[in-house]
Amino acid sequence: FLGRKSYVASAPFTKPDWIFRDSDLLSPLHLIPLRRTANDQETRVRLVVPDDGSAGEQRHDEPVSFELGAREFRTRYVRTDFRDVSDFNLEDADVPQ
Image: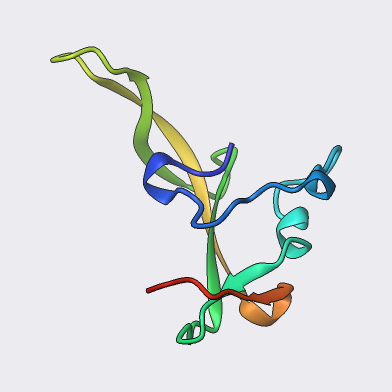
């Protein structure tokens, strides 16, 4: 599972050698190449990751029911972390803008 519907990955995210077992959530992200476009000037990457509630922020957006007229959501906790682009493996991408 990668993110929410509004944050769909822009490129294929899986390859056979990208299967990580017994790993935390953030460690593999530093191994997978970060795709960058020629005009990408960002120096930081924003990561929004699940949190147990001890240090995270509340978001009341986890769907429980999609029933028409009775949609229901529950609270989830996330933590926003910013990392320098230099912390990641970089890969140039010829992605049309």
